[in-house]
Length: 242
Image 1 (cartoon, rainbow, N blue to C red):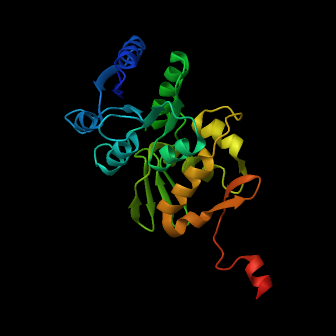
Image 2: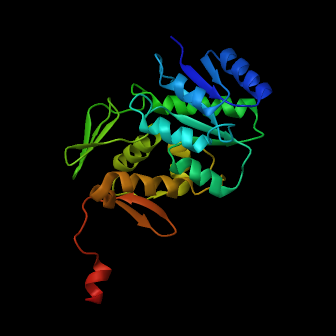
């Protein structure tokens, strides 16, 4: 069965165009013109495989719809792509902070959006060919790759599909520095010319969710991020000052 995309958009002409183009690409679709209708459809009998979510809705902000989807058991891992006319960096950052997996600013080309949808769905598939089999262990961390589950000290931590991919990428390349540009390409499928704090925002959220294990993700100022083998109790700079 083809994948189901829920389109949440209050502009009728755009909603119709998105519905038509997604169906032409082979996806099944459901449509909603406001936030409450979207939440009812998303948490109904059939959970969508992806949600296209407009930020400006007549009843609820798209960010609130995103928060509620992330809080619901059935949709907490469902990929969400935000659509909005807002182009300020702060709006993109807020979208990612509430759990969006990607962000497309209006006006956009249909071809670009279809490519983004395809890329996000591919990343979210547990059986994607790029996924290694089995578990990945690292200190307090354990990744159950086939099930897309993460555990810290035996307790499960709920990550979005994109956060899981970011963590897995850092773990697979542990000890090696990953620049923001590299992560944008390999995790988000974006061009390095995209000027956004997407990576920093997601790393911050990832660390918060991982708790004590978040310290495994080391920041190299002006360079990027690295997954370290262990977390020392005291940083060298702190010991020098004492």
